[in-house]
Image (cartoon, rainbow, N blue to C red):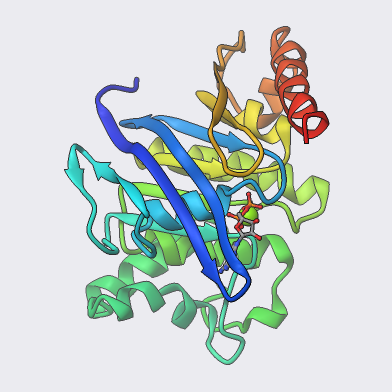
Length: 261
Ligand code: ADP
Ligand code: MG
């Protein structure tokens, strides 16, 4: 069940200043993500999706408007927010365990307890026995799992995911989508996923927000209600009778955006 408002983007605009001028990435964008909700964002390439996540992570500040977490204005980065990116950004010279504790280390919490937690998470997510391996010895899916453990080890309550599955082959991607969704639900996280994959968005989310072309504004939003017998996974979602019509509606929104350009 989802409840109170966890993330709120209140009338946010953001402009990049470059030598050749100003690029307005977001304009008067309004966005809310509820507590425990899994929300996805789709939009044309270059419309400002990554910029939006960078704003919510506190890495950059809006030019106008503000971001609120549980109603409190965000100032700078916070350990409450964890990020997962398309590239796993593992350090090749560190072992799996050493990579997994990196976030804890940065927060000054890589003590024995922290390391134990990272070990437990590695075991839980299929990496038991690989603690002392190096990243090059792992498959793409396993590497991304290490990145997930690194993010989870610091126990953030909000996860921002910027196309974390897009570099993986189809089979690995489906399995990892399933695992990540399970982890997020079991550990009671609020999640905001950016993806260009409409099926991924619909199959994983409680809600999908469609953005317009740059500067991004909210074009449409869909509550994804699917009839799934048993556990809802990205696989079972794809078999739901409503699945195609959600995908089609979102595809049409995006198509109109491209045509209007
Ligand atoms: P998306 O993730 O939706 O593909 P981005 O948020 O990365 O889009 O970028 C939005 C717009 O801002 C694009 O036009 C991009 O070229 C521009 N942009 C992104 N990062 C920078 C930057 N560091 N400096 C200048 N312009 C940027
Ligand atoms: Mg991006």
